[in-house]
Length: 300
Image (cartoon, helix red, strand yellow):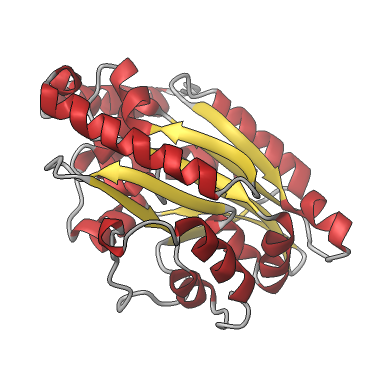
């Protein structure tokens, strides 16, 4: 945490206090020592292995096992493993159309179980969601759709987790803020702020402009930082594991547009309400924390 004045110290103590309060409400990670816990974890792991064989033609970016990371911090969340993989040419064409699309790229597939541990599920960022959120057309998403279909087609329809998209409009669940600094300074400040949190891990950084160069696609400076904090993230996912698709790990996009530099990230509460029609104290605490840390990093 950054502790530069008494007010910020008070915020730190508030986060610690709330974290302790939240911890008392969490199910023990020892559930994975039970037969039921072992069975569902194995089932999710097997779905992930099947996914691997389906995505062999793509570039692997990161695999994040939310529940095991949380368990290592003494926090429980149901099995939840997100795989992030890429087709750089498709990324580049979509970001050229709308740089904010970078928040939903590269491809993401979540293999997980709901809190009832009733069975393994799969969720992914659908082309329909990206069309609505970023103002793109079906034709714009043609290659994206083909790639996602090629990876998921071997699974039965029953395993997929459906999402009601009727409430999705342009820029749904996005927090977008203008930086006071140039692109490189903004990116450097944010990375320093993230790494300075103490409980946060950086899982990857994707330079979309550099990715686009071999395809002669003109993309302005656009970089995605993938990061997360296993303990608070596990608490926020305890009853809402599908958040492992969009909110954990957190995705921070830094991009140039109209002679300005902006950042964008996902509102955790918005996605919790989309998937579960509710939100929790841990999610709201993390939302406030993200806002505070990011705004400090990009404000002169």
